[in-house]
Structure formats: C-alpha cells, structure tokens
Length: 456
Image 1 (tube, one colour):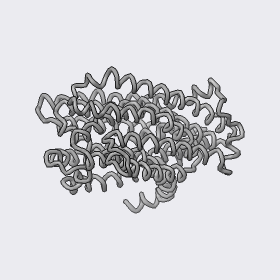
Image 2 (cartoon, rainbow, N blue to C red; image 1 turned 90 degrees about the vertical axis):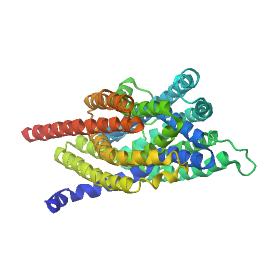
Image 3 (cartoon, rainbow, N blue to C red; image 1 turned 30 degrees about the vertical axis):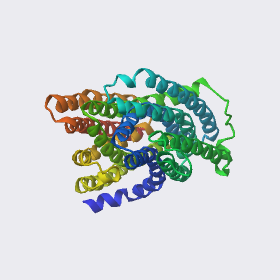
Image 4 (cartoon, rainbow, N blue to C red; image 1 turned 45 degrees about the vertical axis):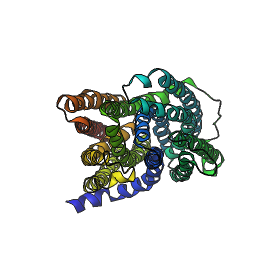
C-alpha cells in the first residue's frame, strides 16, 4: 500500500521539497533569531534574564505575527497572477504590499511602545524580569519595520518560485546576529556588557541588513525585470490594497489567535514563577524551530496551490497538497521521537540551572506529541490560503485556541493543580482541534473544485 501511495505522489514530493527547503531555511531564520537570543542569554547571563526573554518573546511575537500575516497576503496573489501569466499585475501588487507593510510596521512599533508603558507592569510578572524585559522589547519594536520590508520582497520572490535567495540572506543574517549578540551580551572588544539588551541590538542590526540586501536583490536581478515593469515604490491603488488585505488580514488573525494562545500560556506560566517560565521558554523555543520548518512546507504548499489554482489545474492542486501533508507528518513524527528520547539532554543547550532542566524535560515530552498536530494544522492553513479560503480557517483557529486550548489549559493547570504541564496539555488539545477541522475543510474545498471542473 505504501509503495502505491509513494509512486502516485513521488513527483509532488520532489516538486514540493524543491520549493519548500529554501523557504524552510528562511522561515527557520525568524525562529533562530529568538532561539539564539535565548541560548546566548541563558549561557552568558542568568535565569531571571532568560525569563525576561520568554516574557518579551511571548509579547513581541503576538505583535509581530500581525505584520508577518499581512505580508503573507502577497504570496498567493503573486502565485495566482504568475499562473495566469499576468506579469504586469505582479509589480503593481508588490508596490501596494510595500506601502502597506511599511505602514503596518510603523503602527506595530507604536503599539509595542504603548505596551511597554501601559501593559507590561500589570501582567503580575516578577519585577526583576520586567526590569530586564523593557529595554529588550524596546529594541525589538524598532526592528519590526525593516523586518516587514524584508518580508515584502521575500514574499514577492517566493510567490514567483525564487526561494533560495531569501534563505541565503536569512542564514547570513543569523550568523551576524549570533556573533553580535555574544559580543554585546558578554561585553567584548572594549564594548561594555549589555546583558539581555545586547541581543535586542544585534537583532535590530541583523534585520536592517537583511531588508537592505533582499530589496537590492529583487530590484536588480534580471529574472524579475518583466515582473517589475509596473513597479513604483509610491504607487498605491485602493482595489489592489483591498485584495492584499482580504487575504493578509485573516492570515494575520490566524497567526494572532495561535501565537496569542501561546503568549497567554507564557503569561499564565509567569504567574507560577520565573523557573517555570524559563523552562517554558526552552521547550517552546525548540518546538518553535520544528514549527517553522513545517511553516516553510506550508508556505511552499501555498505557492503550489495558488499556482495550480491560477492555472485551474485542480487535480494537481489536490495531489500536491496531500503530498505536503505526507511530508510534514513524516518529519514531525521523527522530531517527536527525538524530543521524547532526548528530553533530558536538550535543555542543556540553553541552561545548566538544575531547577529549570527537569521541568523543561517534562514539557519536551508533551511537545513531542503536539508537534504532529501543529505541523498538520499549519499545512492545512497554507493550502487553503493558496485558493483564497481564509475566513473560515480564521474562525477555526479562534475556536481551537481560545475556546478549547487556553480554557482547558487554565483549568488543568490551576484548578487540577497540574501547573505548567496542564497548560501545555490544553495547548495540545487546541492544536488537535485545529488540525482536524482544517483537514476536513481542505477535503471539502478541494473535492468540490475537482467535481466542478469535471462538470465543466
């Protein structure tokens, strides 16, 4: 049976992986920034400052995913227009996306600044953790603007199938981020030790460089010339802006519902204690790495789905999507086994604190199981996004995380006294709910497309 399935989907596995692997490299770059921050702070400072990284990341990611989600609205539109060979429209969409993303970046910067002044002191967190968190969050807030400029050109290039360049930019950017982070945090070459603020400054520099390089590449590369004939940085059209927003805003909401659930979990865990919060940061940082790999596969699924949708090739659309499900199930199963078997070893990547390590080890076992559902739900979102189906999936994500995940996690954690483990059990149930409902939605939509095309 397995050989028959493999034979049927083999061409799609190859196509999807060829497209997905560079995107995975680029997507992992976002998580590597925060993972590197955690590792550097965990080894060169103390548990309180590592807990500050956890608090800041939980708040910052909640804001950042709004911008990332809106930027993702460009990719399926570019893939669809490219499938229709409507090259001039691609440049006009890029112009509008750039303006939208810069405006969104400025808005999110202001939002984070308001959070620093009016919200962070009232989250019932350890005062020392909050003291270290504020300057770190301030630096990250500035980095939103160059990151969204980078995202604009990255999503444009990836929508046209050029995925390797953003990966290379991300790899070099992360190398610079790690080197500068160690220098600033530890204090080297005559620079005074900056503690946790040092990784904030290194991240800001990294994102400015990445935006500059990606912009230069897209505007100068020969293979984009026919797509950029109608591109003007100041061109803004209400109709096209609405088209981008109709996909980008629901995608932003999807990410917001999911990330806010994990941010809410981090805040709840912070009320238990700094040790538990540091353990949560270790486990969620490792789980986020595998999630971003799955997200890269999902982004490739969006591009392939959008391209096939534009060509009205609905049979290939469905087969390619199913192949993406197969790939992510295999990958997440492997990483789940690694998390479970190496749960007592992996926390040492971040810290040697004897109080933190056993708690993080327990969470990694839970993370091993929820990865399967996390991977399949993000692929489901990616496929549905490719055909422009974003509203119902947005409701599904809200239901899964805020009606199922967080309430159950709260009850298990505080009323049944399961603590941080109980909160993670709730998150797992939320991911399971999202995974099942999105797969059923995918089945319904793609089968309907194939039936309608057969009638025509």
